[in-house]
Image (cartoon, rainbow, N blue to C red):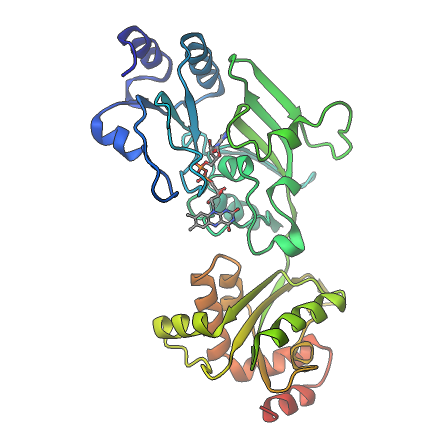
Length: 363
Ligand SMILES: Cc1cc2nc3c(=O)[nH]c(=O)nc-3n(C[C@H](O)[C@H](O)[C@H](O)COP(=O)(O)OP(=O)(O)OC[C@H]3O[C@@H](n4cnc5c(N)ncnc54)[C@H](O)[C@@H]3O)c2cc1C
């Protein structure tokens, strides 16, 4: 329990509604997504401004009270469990998108913005924030940043550190600082931005984040390929990348996983196959045509007995949102959309479709 005078001063800083210390509330903040570990904090604070964060940190520093900063608590590393008691600093009120700068391709947001909310907001204006941890519908961008989260789009687009351009942060002393910004060539001095990315809440409390955005891909296509062994699936991924095609996402499912997915979603997957690949491509249109470059030929080359088919849009887009639901969504779309997907793949390959139909008969 915190000394009563400290409690009073903390309430004066954040307001009584944002100071929690009932047994139920403390219990709710005693664990995160990490299995096994648990410890009770002495209090949970929900500051609403950077100034409040600074005053809380300064006071805690004076009294030697531990601070654990928390986004949505989805980390799997025990990063928000208050093992020494003290204060859990919940950053969920920093949930505002301050600016989407379409001229500079940046967004400036509070650290407590939920990742999927940022996706939605920037996509509404034709822009794209690629980092996509599987927890993105719950996790905060501040938590993503502190853990340098990355998801299935990492191969093509990179991870959180590749998108963070500038920060506002508060040191344990209560000092409020800024680093980086919108300028790409902001290179003088120590790179504090890079230092803070991945620092897991140990160096500072991040309050505001400026991220880089890229143009939103205009088309999506999902290719599903089945293999009679595991090696051919791995070789196919190598071949696709060696052909200088970087898919937006690649998911590999072995036979055991295919069975689990099929039991759950009743897709009619070919369970005699030993593995499958789910390859999602995205692209911008050039002269009105999508520029997807990987097609069934890359999956059918060099293997003994394989199947491959593709589906446009819908389910493929779901696939990028997270496994296993993404897997199920995309497989369902491709399975439902077999015949339309055949012509789609021919278009994507720049062919007339005959080759794709021949591939299907061969199965
Ligand atoms: C179902 C599921 C799927 C997942 N998928 C992925 C995945 O695909 N890729 C991946 O990388 N991770 C994944 N994770 C792990 C986790 O979701 C991520 O690490 C995510 O970035 C954590 O965000 P959060 O808001 O929940 O942060 P929290 O768990 O609350 O905090 C994480 C760390 O960041 C610190 N922190 C939080 N906010 C701040 C701040 N404002 N300032 C300073 N430090 C702060 C905390 O102290 C803690 O050390 C997954 C977790 C789950 C449960």
